[in-house]
Length: 196
Image (tube, rainbow, N blue to C red):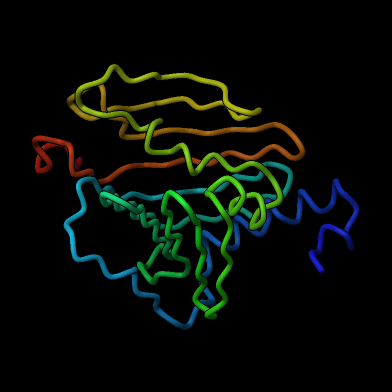
């Protein structure tokens, strides 16, 4: 039985937001995860740092690393501790979304939106991240609202269509800010000068 039946709704949403913070931080993870093996080359990837800020619960703030790899038929998201130890893998295909944690537990849903809702108890914007960070051949939307989330691009690479830093905030049920700093992305032309 899911915990949503055991915890009152407001507390449940806060608990899931805190679970997100714990997922990103995960310093107690003792097993290193390995991403899915792909035989084709990723056509897009990025690496960066993520932070979760819960203003009402500063002791629950956390940070970590993220790696995003896109393949022709799948996307892999690896969440790691600040030291680089993988603590969670998310594997997305057109027909399934799967989460695997460092303790070996596996959760699957039909799509990314359902998976992130099941994991965190709220609509998480991570499934839309690829669109929000832009592409070299399309104008970058620097501010938008999606399902109660406010997304702002605060810095770009030399190509102004490629986000380097974004902030994603939501006020309800508890204020939360997710910050993504992109260190490397495969669609930049001059990584050496842009990774400042």
